[in-house]
Length: 203
Length: 203
Image (cartoon, rainbow over all chains, first blue to last red; front, side):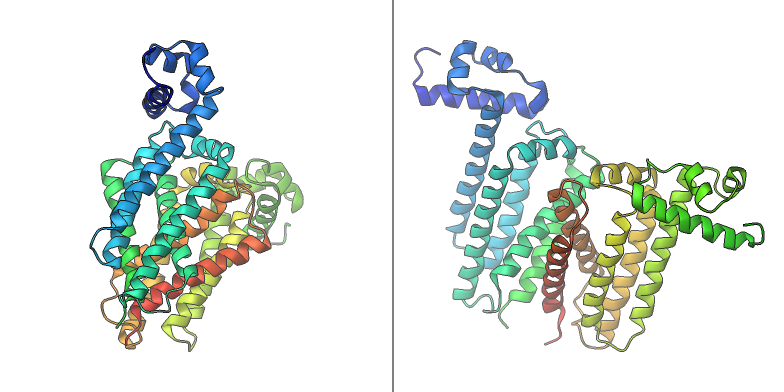
């Protein structure tokens, strides 16, 4: 590790941490194990991340940023605003599918983690809302959507997506989504998106 | 109690049990206390309800039936299908508001109760779906809704209502909805209903 630059070291730590958290869950991973994975001294690891919570937080922020960047790329593609909504729904679910595997091992412990890092989730919801509103405004200025699509409706649409996922997770009682559940949830979200879009379409 | 008929006794037990469960929660209520409330011998109580679970189940079934009856009455009123959807949303939330107070004292313990009585909730969801589809079909036959409103969409609309509530409960981390939360949730559900209806309206 000695030849790596500081930001490369940090990246190596984050990658190792992400793998561990995803596989064993936040509570079952130790800083020793992560240090061992990348053959780094424990003191070095603590220099970059003073506590396991800091490391977990950094992994989450990185994942959130990756998702936002992916959406921003998609927003530049030459597809209609309606198609962008569906694309958003699908990328979002994919993101959460990898995210829930981040060792949260179930909704209940996920809730505990969530309260520790609440602000992260609030910021993320704000960012998501901005992106969805950008699509809605684009659709209005294109005349693809009628002008009575309010920001309030867009916000409720985001809450609908959140709620449909929570509903599915709550039925699974903390188990991760399997392929069949994932496809059912994606289908439900796309039907919800169609309902939303049917109301918006300019006639 | 001796002069009461069997079905009156049962009703008195159910009323006492409902009050206790609503106030103290399922786990904190004993059969002794319920028997005491109505001055009934414990043996008599056990004759009607062999276990606390049976009593809790009977209270839930009664509440569910009351809700279904209230909806069925509303469905007969001379209002449009669109108004019926909004009325449904509002009665449903009111029902769940009293229901969650049924001593579930939070989402987590509610989940445990839910797994014990899973079939009850599955049956209830089926009944709800039937009622909502009845409104949708009425709207289609009235020419109020366009004919491309599918049963699948109606089902997702029910899941949307369930999801919005779960989302709110999950944010509250197991505390009961207060008046402000309740009003916010009702507003969100009505916006969701408007989104649903905007897509359905015959132009």
